[in-house]
Length: 607
Image (cartoon, rainbow, N blue to C red):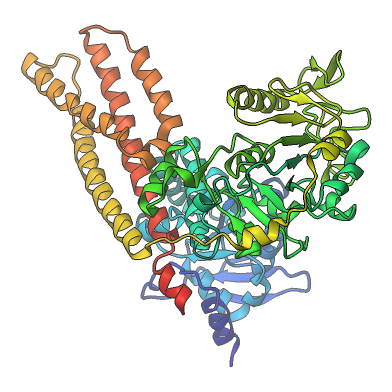
């Protein structure tokens, strides 16, 4: 096989589409002469004037190694330069290699080796700037749209030195497309949709895992120990050994490894965050005992849930609209929901409450700094300590006096206290023996708690094995999802049609409009109320746009209430923003569902 064929084979094996324009008929604008000993490529134009392409990177435009980016890189004439730039990027960054001159691609296929880009995620584009629609559809799909938050541009040495004009129209088209399809929906919508992707990818694991509703009250009057990673744990961790086998040990993911290292096997490990860093820190390289169950929010990294397979407890998150929507589609009951608060420790308490455990015993829940640091020894924070930031905050301590804390811990403490104050059917004991005082708890030394409540043997794993799995009618779920997509698309089309009317009025705006035209405009703008009110009837849509919606409501409220033409124009502009946000958010939601819902999950399971 010649080099051209070898390169085509390498490119075709990547599994992603490229966007290659047909070569225009006629003479090539240049030809390749050769490469010197320094790697400088020499070309000659049809005017017989030579030009060179150097494999020298632009140090000022390099990608960020710790940030997932969408990088539009112009020029494919030097794969060596591309490889050098890509080596500086995050492994999950995507390079869109745009070559305005298709003859450079022909040259690269004939003389370069695409094999050197094997460790790079890339798409090749030679289409004209006005022919990028299909490229944008791919980039705006749920597979890549999360990268749109961090867009960068890079130009190879040819376009830096010889032909900067050829890239101008591409940049304009790219920026306009991103602005229209991404920034109109706002960052908060982007973040929410990442959560929806994880939720949809994780629900397929419900098939083989315990039915959360059947867990309700399953461990009534069994003591539960909620083990967090506060620095006070170093003082009383040995006492937990006495509780093993006579109570439920529920660990936050930060502390699970330390417990295992001390010969303490938790019954459950809790995770609640969706960031990939949680997987990397606590799960990727850590093996857990086969008796250990995961308690996880559905928003967690799917790799974590997959690691535990049929040992995962996957509840719905209570009081969150997205999970009300999802629960309804899955045919779930209120008993499938749990309180999760805002942290792993909150989720652990919610789980203990759900299964009926009592007393619920807090261990290592300092929510304050200790004498030797912010966390117990033997955790990831030994090598990656929290940064000192913000003003020093003081709260009442476990033993009296004041202890140093941080804003986020105060928030976590407040969430606990609000829950505990309203929990009247359960004894909540704070056995941390240090840190901050938590209202709504009884303070008691861990050794005394174990002695008083850990009386009878109790095998958590055996009891968990008795709990039946979810019984979900997946065919019915698929029908509900399809109906939802169809109705949502009809709503989107209606909003888009209304948006076009509003935009037409904006384009044709005249400060001296006739009374008749003003009245027609009023009638059209009044229809926006229909679409605005409909948002609240769709749990999923509302959940995903609530942050951006709040900002727009503030804009509406800031408009002076008057009959002036100026107020009318301001109202029209905000209405256009609202309809653009709704239309774009719906489009993205449909994309996310279609691409991430586990279609035919029951058939795949049976296979």
